[in-house]
Structures are given as C-alpha cells and as structure tokens.
Length: 380
Ligand SMILES: [Zn+2]
Image 1: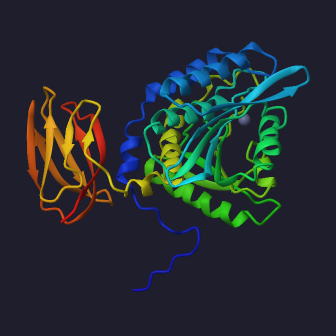
Image 2: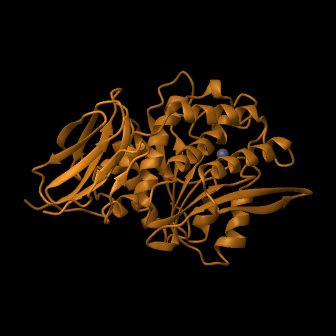
C-alpha cells in the first residue's frame, strides 16, 4: 500500500504529554478571568479601566513567576498605553519565537467576547506553560488599542519586530472567540493569510490546517477554515510573517456595544477553545519534541519520587501520601501499557515488560484526579 501525504495533510500524532497538560485546565480558573475582565468595565484608551486591566494581566504573570515582562509604550493623542510582552526562553531555538496574542482593549462596552475571551485564554495557557519546557521561545502578547485600527500591534511590528528582524516561526492571534449564548457553539474558525504579500501564504495555510487538526484532536470543537482579516495579525502578515488565527464561527452581534457581556456569550465554548489553544501552542512551540529528550529522576508536587529515570528493569515509586494511588503508563501514541497500584506511605518497586523507549505516565489519586504526569524512559 502506498501512502501519499501532501503539504497540510500531515497528520499530527496524539501526544499524551500535551493531553496531560490539557487535563490540568480548570473551567473555574478560566471563568474567573472572564468575570474579572468584565468587572473592569469599558477599556478604551485613556480610561482607568484599561490601565487596571493591564495591571491585572501583569500581576498574574508576576505571580506565576514569569520574569521577562516588557511594556511597549505608545501614545494615542495625549494618552499613553502599552502592549504587554511576556517572553519565555526556549531550550533549543532561543532566538526563534512562537507568538500567541490577544488584544485587551475594548470599545463601547466591557468586551468580554471582544476580546476578554482571547485575553483569558492567553492567560490561562500561560499559567500552565510556566513549567513546560519548549524548544522555541514563546511570547505571550497582550496588544492594546486594537479597536482603533490595530494601533498597538502596528506599533510593535514597526518599532520592534521589523527593526530587529525578529525571527518568528508563527503567530497565533486569538480575537473574539466567545460564541453566542443560546446557540450551539460547536465550531471554531481557523484563519489563514490569503493576502499580499503571497510569499508567506502557503506556510500560513499549512499551519492553519495543523491548527485545525490539533483543535479537533484535543477539544470537542469542529473547525472551519477561512481567511484572516481585521485583527492584530495583519501588521505581521503585511510584513511577510506567517500567521494563523482563531475567530468564533457563530458571530456575535454584541461586540463594540454595552451588551458584549459574559451573559451574552458561551464560556463553555471558550473553555473548549482553551484546550485547543494550549495543545496547539505546545505543539507549535516544540513542547512535545523536548519531551523526548533525556529526563531525570522525578519528584512531584506531592513529593512522590520516581527513580531511577531512565530505568532498566525496575522503577521505584515512593508514595508518601495517605492515599492509594494509580500509576498508568502510556506509549507515545497514547495507548495504555501498564496500570499499577501504589500503596499509601510505601515505596513500590515495579517491574515492567515494556520495550525500550519513551513512555508517559500519569498518577491518579483516589478521586481520579491527575496529580502528576511526565515522561519516563526504559533503556532495555
Ligand atoms: Zn477584537
């Protein structure tokens, strides 16, 4: 049998490491971000609300331990405002960036859909990304003054990206992904560059197909492919950079009005898209390729120790908790290989019949919550 693959149709393999991070997402954590965004009010340039929202964004990155936070200041008339750029350095391609962005300003309303939805997704992902090692460097960017004509993103591209000849692998723009309350929001539009210059369009189309594949793999959403327009990716694609984007499929009638509120959108839909976004950002930033590197002994947040790693015949798991835990081992295609019980307050010495190779493990507590996941390697 001959299998032919064409560009854009290359299947992405399911990655248990990505799934394990997606499993860590919490609906309530996302919902609280949307609620906080709504409560700041109308976030137009010159308002206290815009500055308060910016400070709220910065505070969260600071709390999570991010240290590279830049404020890119610009002026609209007499008023200053700024883009927020948070950089996490990659372990292999330090000077090549994967960028995910969403604007945080709003127009005529609280803008919980446009673009509290994108803002909350970027934040919720960044919360979980803190401890994920990536091959490429990542920038999480919260642009300002998108609503008055892509002012913040244009400023950043003209004053930083182009003069520095920044090496950008891909930019994923997330804008207005809240859905419409009372409708069946089961599809997300994935957007590609169909404009001049055309030199970057084939790459954009291929990445957008990949984005759609990953979205369907890690969320319950269907996808639709359309063209990019009218948001912060425009100054990037106009300058030859490769972009993709998410935009709601059921288009809300409320943006740029006082009715762009949490009650008029579908936070469950935003949560599904958060799963898709996290998975895609992990894939594009090379989180999975790093995960096949050499690991070491593991100590989890609950002080469960897994050693040695890599292991030859036996691997030990020290469970100091008072619960019986469950250890599951998966191969790289996500197929369950082994399932072990870990007695409370004991060290289990496990012998497996696995072939040599890389595996992923998940440890579940008695409530079936995942309390640790990661990679182990068997050497022979
Ligand atoms: Zn917007």
